Image (cartoon, rainbow, N blue to C red; front, side):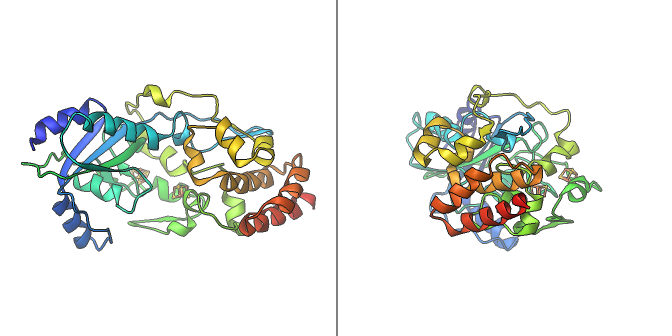
Length: 308
Ligand code: SF4
Ligand code: SF4
């Protein structure tokens, strides 16, 4: 397979493209002691699509998730764009966007789409960290790899480490369990510390917002990521709509992929931070009706704090 023409095809749909041999990805994983599943297909295309920084604040009635969820669900956007490229090529392929066991950031490092920052994200020269990643595994060998050229790194900067509210970042390391973006997407009861720290309906933007590599960058807004009006989520909707009705109303939003209960649980943490007692009756009702014990445990704790 001709790497240059493959690169040009993907470049029509993505901001950044790297093409690597799967053997290079697997051997780098081994060298760095990172466990990844074996991949049968010999070629990996790593794609990056930019998204813009847009800040929307919570109100007393509506809550905001991390801004990477704004616009259409990026899982669908990236998959659709990859399919559009691959439909013109005669190769078998598999797509990985987020919900797969492979390591996108490692593949992006190998393809040198960006360097691996102290905030644990890939930092691209033009797009900073505001970039969705996707992988395409292709069942065809390439003649050459298409690897970008990076000379940048974090240097002495430690802004993300200092700004992280839960001390999840250290020099050259990371405690994923302390990361808000990790635990506020997990199906679990939040402990008191986690409750106090969680400020977002979904995800966490702090280590990206403070990063100097995200200043003066050229982030375009692709048409799919234009604001849709569904960025702010109504608290009443969260506690009163059925899962099905909620999904219909907020369809195509990236925060939906983990389910509504996670958003309800995160909303509890924000209501607690706001000392917002307006929804106590709805919380009480949800404790009676909700089937998940981890949700009920957090809700019971928050309700008790709000009632006191
Ligand atoms: S996403 Fe938030 S909690 Fe996680 S490392 Fe970054 S600043 Fe810390
Ligand atoms: S804030 Fe500084 S240390 Fe953290 S990722 Fe950005 S450049 Fe690197």
